[in-house]
Amino acid sequence: MSEINVTPLVDVMLVLLVIFIVAAPLMAGRLALQLPQAQATVSGLPATALRVAMDARGAVTLNDQPVTDLELRQQLQATGASRPDTEVLLLADATVPYGRVAAFIGMAQAAGLSRIGFVGQPAAEPR
Image (tube, rainbow, N blue to C red):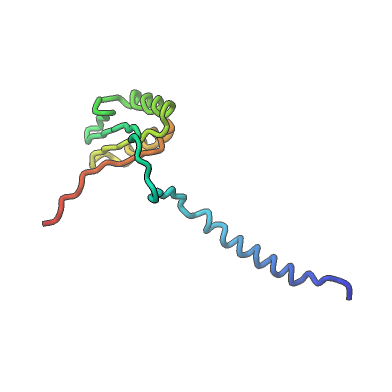
């Protein structure tokens, strides 16, 4: 008999195909995180930061200067074009609607600024 029996090869390939079909959605659903590296930190100049504050009345300040939404957008775009590694520190009042905060985050990311930090007050220690 000089023919090669391909049935076991086909069986193995079908099993591998089923495994990949089942495993593919699981690999796509995971979160892509960029975890910090803590082995050796390099001391250098601190990154520049923009401080954006939103109060309960809806007023917005940029680096302690009141600005309109248009001025804020223009400043974010100018900063994103010149220094895209700039960190944006967001100080939002607890009563500011989530939609307003989400709109600001979208505005900052559209300007090319992806480093956004949320600033909060430390909780009071229990007695």
